[in-house]
Length: 458
Image (cartoon, rainbow, N blue to C red; front, side, top):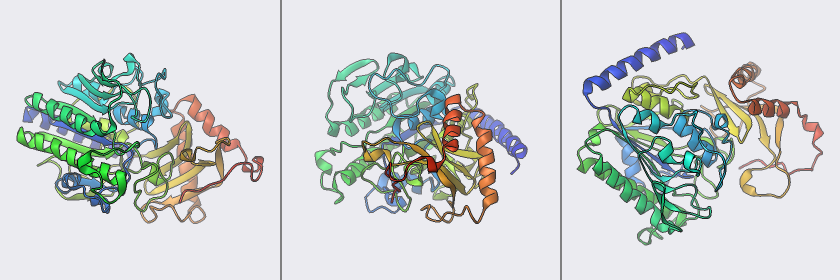
């Protein structure tokens, strides 16, 4: 579809969507559930042996995407992008934020919560935040009426459990977190059932450290990781039950996904790579969504989507005005609602910290550079982003494993993607452009053979 035709069709669909929302008299509730480090292959509906009946039910009664992406392979930038619809490098959040970091989502950005709050929604963030722990960056300053959770990852210290801006526990037990977050989510649903609400429920499971509750230990036969996933699924079932008991499930859009791929444990399915890498296993994540009567049940789509698309999608569905900044995502509402098999995305960019390493155009993914070893190896030698001697091209429709380099077969595709990368860089921060160009100028021959380990993920 040509860009002008796509924009015209998109504007018509958006106008129609807003008219439908107004005619219905009440915008839908939104429940956005985010797992932490859950792999693409960790759900039963994605081929896993683990028991995940409640998440599978969302997929069975709605849609499951096989090509859905995080905008980053690590936590903080992934969450910043999900909440704003913009690449985290635009916000100076290229990597993981640690306690007392001076950075966070700046005031120039608009979060999903701020957007929906302006449209009359009640908003709550329950669970893990991790996009800035200073007061000016915390959930209550970013559009959330209520916050109950952790300011960052539960493997960091000190670890306060907070309600609004008050600490309610200094060191909460890991096994208490999933039940506590669920209880708070259920309470919020019950208290706000009469008005449209947005619930951002960001669990810490199955990120390490893994300490599932006593009722789930040993249940999965796949260790503490599998036990944590089955416990997570049980508690998601409690949230679904609350929607049903309050008779609002018919008017509630439920979305479940993960912030990035699996870390040390977990299944990436047949994909290559893990958390912290720009191979598919680091960024392609589970995605299921349900909205009874609106999303056709039993839908499985290969159309591409990403966390960057969630803000514009929710704007289209609810009629909320879009933020006055350029967005890196597009509305995939037509795909979710069964009105289109896919939605054009232009160029999708894969970042590792400040480094632009890959770009996807339609079915094609081009690798341009790669770090000399994965971040999760924690080696003491310098970690350098190196240009590939020859860019590697993969057909993601036929080769999700990224095992066959097709660059020799399709040099014109390589040239087209590289040209589009240059155009995309024009709209990104100077540091991204300079880092990319420095990497591309760096000849591989300048790095002494054997100076650094050259490792490829299995």
